[in-house]
Length: 81
Image (cartoon, rainbow, N blue to C red; front, side):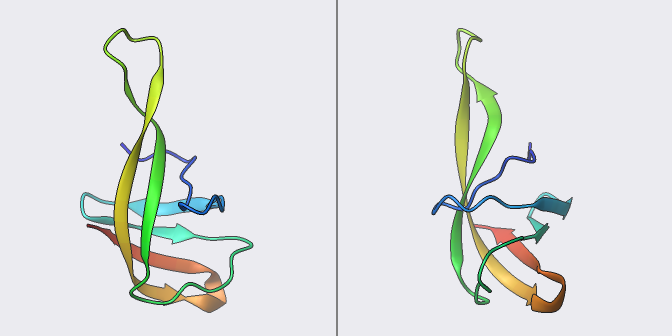
């Protein structure tokens, strides 16, 4: 499941998930230099799953790729790899 606290691997916070599906999502990025179409990202999603003892949440890394961008509106379309 995708949650709000998604990070690009270099630590830049994503502002908002506009919508998401099973194969990708549309993101609104704030304060980030324009990323090129074709760029590969490693998203970290937390909380995503619990350790078997149920006491701690562990992040899940999601490799993905930018397939389109709208620089004017700061939004990007990504697909999960």
